[in-house]
Image (cartoon, rainbow, N blue to C red; front, side, top):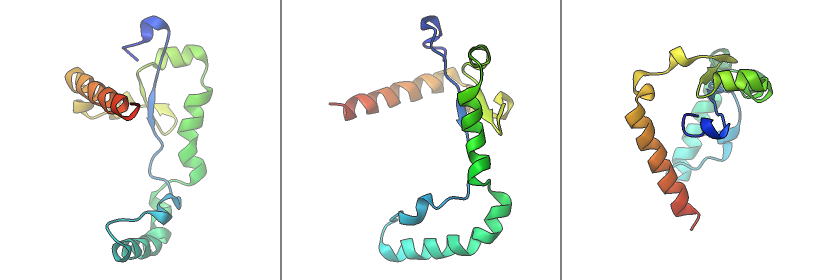
Length: 118
């Protein structure tokens, strides 16, 4: 957000939370045997995890919330972090507020993306 605010471009970040989905159903880890064991473990944990993790609908709520906020609220929240549908900057770890680390991550991400586009 800080980088492009002068161009009237704003951004926020968010975390949808841990969501009970089947997105990992085709995940191949190391080899088929390990993948099969992990799938069995997760299947066994699914009844318990549904009480800890968010439903797909609840998990989508923060993404939807940030997509539909007013322009004024988006500008006001620019650079902010959303969690559970609310601005939650206080939940950020201290290292995530470090501008030197932010710059380093930005430059590394930029370098990786530029190398992929060639």
